[in-house]
Image 1 (cartoon, rainbow, N blue to C red):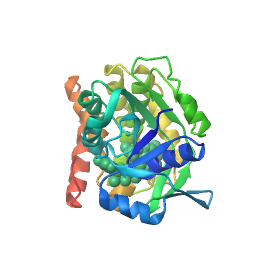
Image 2 (cartoon, rainbow, N blue to C red; image 1 turned 180 degrees about the horizontal axis):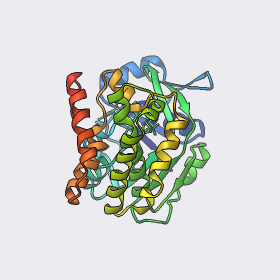
Image 3 (cartoon, rainbow, N blue to C red; image 1 turned 90 degrees about the vertical axis):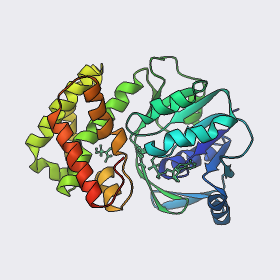
Length: 304
Ligand code: NAD
Ligand code: KPL
């Protein structure tokens, strides 16, 4: 049985690690450096808080610089760290290793796949929600679902049953790019506006024209990018998400408030770049990108 190596002991990485480990599956964390490793070891493991109950999981850990071959790894870092993290693992990957890429947005998956042409890169798109409230301590904040797939491959791999064993809600799809594009479009229609207007998702009810125009441009982009499924009913879904998550702050809003780097290059940046590549005029999206970049710059946050 392949060990599940987890690179990125952050919110989603630890959420996966804890559930796999308690199902009796072999799991190992890959930490950034020896300082992080000794801090982890001194805490005795990672903690997961579910329904206000905290459990400690003493999952073994090492740094990425170890020497044991890796046959399967969950890459659970942010999109802007993915390519470098994948490259650091390259010397340890067995031929045909499986790399599950949990990054939001698009662009980082393709960069990793180009870096590691001999590996099987499986893309994932998740609606589960988790956040860290202490070192190696994660709160499972929102039930969700994870879509997995390799573009164009409909046959699902045998190891998916390990996710069922671990109680991780998931489904294999041949159209993983469509799922990723749809989530990207939702995030582009909602998240930047919540930053610019300084509001919860529900605050966007006050800007219906702006949301509608963005959804029109995003749908045009999705159609031209060959993603009709992702384009269909986008505006209605965006309106639905604004209603159902009215009291929530978007992930980008939270990142900006906390002074953290955003994944802008893999969301709005990717959308604008693809629009240009396809020769589309997307004035509202472009203007949104410029306004968001200016807002990040004003706060001294990275622009990529
Ligand atoms: P996070 O910041 O909580 O965790 C990322 C971890 O990766 C950090 O601990 C970081 O130190 C580590 N890391 C980065 N580079 C590394 C390296 N080279 N070696 C070892 N460790 C490294 O991020 P997250 O919230 O878990 O998000 C991961 C991805 O999942 C993002 O693309 C995010 O958009 C997406 N996502 C997150 C959620 C959520 O609720 N947290 C939901 C859906 C999608
Ligand atoms: O995924 C989201 C986020 O905040 O990142 C939603 C709730 C869909 C808003 O775009």
